[in-house]
Each structure stands twice: as structure tokens, then as C-alpha cells.
Length: 128
Image (cartoon, rainbow, N blue to C red; front, side, top):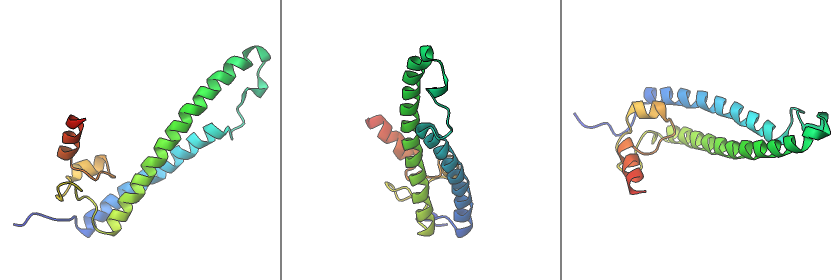
């Protein structure tokens, strides 16, 4: 029997549902992080006593910087998930971009935006 060169439409649909669920959660997480950075929840140091204000402002700045970095990382994850949806539509989803072989379903279920097989990914890690 010849080796499969792509996933079936049914399999692609399964992966699409996984990605859409992850995408929905990722957007919610991103909005939470974004609101933390922009302080849209109204929780600020304005309502505290002057003694603690300086300390709280410093901690608040650090928290906003960390939230900003996390929000950027989350947006990158969202972009990877969207790219995976495009690959599903093109029927190229799940094909390793290095070897051209199918990425195992287990890996795609764990990392649905993966574009490399675990072997290639491990080899890259060893080189670095």
C-alpha cells in the first residue's frame, strides 16, 4: 500500500475543529492580556494611599511589560493557528515542510499549528 501523502477531508475537518477551539481560547486569553496592559478594568494605583503608590506603580509597570510580552506571544500563536487553517483549506495541512511526509496525528493534536515532524524539530534543537 502506498504511503499517504495527505490527510483525508474528514481528518482535516477534525483538525479544523481542534484549531478553531484553540483559536477561540487564544483570542479570549489575548483580550485578557490586552486589557491588563491598557488597564481597561479600572484597577489602578489612583485609589491607594500615597505611601504605597510609588511601590505599586513600579510593580504595575513590570506587570504591564510582562503582560505586553505575553500578549505579543499570544498574537503570534493566533497567527500560527490562522496559517494552519489556510493550510487545511489548501489541503497541505499536516505535511512536514522539510521531509514532505505526514506529521503524525498525535503531534498535530498536541501542536495543531506544527509544520515540522518531531524528528526534524529535534534535529534542529540539537544543532542549536
